[in-house]
Length: 290
Ligand SMILES: NC(=O)c1ccc[n+]([C@@H]2O[C@H](COP(=O)([O-])OP(=O)(O)OC[C@H]3O[C@@H](n4cnc5c(N)ncnc54)[C@H](OP(=O)(O)O)[C@@H]3O)[C@@H](O)[C@H]2O)c1
Image 1 (cartoon, rainbow, N blue to C red):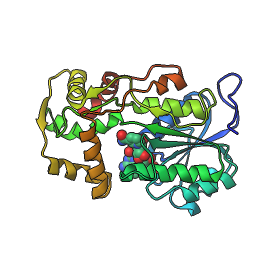
Image 2: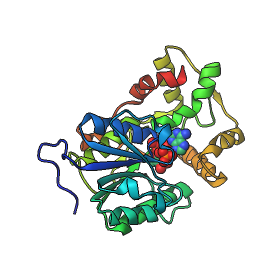
Image 3: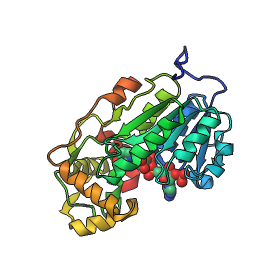
Image 4: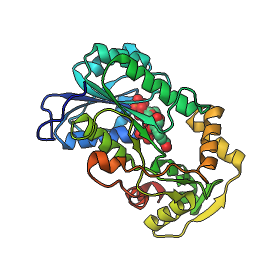
């Protein structure tokens, strides 16, 4: 059964919380929040020296896809935040169960499904199944599109004040990484709902063109918007994985012109605070585009 909430809604004393993927945007935001809350936090990643985390955080090397590396990370950890590693989570989830973990919060994605034609949905579904099979109580945070996906525009914004994208009318309700981290914090520390598959989105549906305008407003200048050639876009997406992943991202973007994922309200429901707007995300990330 899930661990009951702390009576004061705060720190659960000597409980160690393990945050994997230490270099990740959400992992770093979560580590900072856990530290601020006085929690005993351990961060683990493939390259812990690159995580640049504040003093006071125990940082250990661990690769989720390689169970042989997980012992020091999981030792004594009662709660765990995990990414859906492309290498699979079966060994990790079994090791967490053997180490006595009491709850795993998995960063998953909306649409996670074993039968999907979309390799991203299948990868997240495989991670969910591995965690569920471990017998450790879990919460799967099924995130919608991240506001941070627009960082892919940073190069041309910095170089030429222009956004290049083939889908100006593609719509989404982008979620701020700080809100995903805030939800994870609430679940891990017992102040938010445990269990289930909450779908995390931002508060409002915006076209990519409007997101570009809001980044321009945060920078205090008007940005151009050029319709990018689809093949060039596919080449830009290659960093996310093999060609079928890039193809799935193209399909998502095209589908979301007419059928975007609607905002869900789950961030506010779980954290008690409204989800941050994209305008706020753009202000928080002004430095990435300037
Ligand atoms: N983008 C979306 O719209 C979306 C939507 C739904 C769900 N998701 C999920 O969210 C995940 C991404 O979350 P995120 O934005 O927090 O992750 P991120 O910043 O992209 O980092 C993901 C992981 O990649 C590893 N990594 C390897 N090289 C890195 C580097 N140079 N800098 C930073 N990290 C590096 C890190 O793990 P190590 O420290 O172990 O190397 C890190 O935890 C996706 O993989 C997906 O599962 C994304």
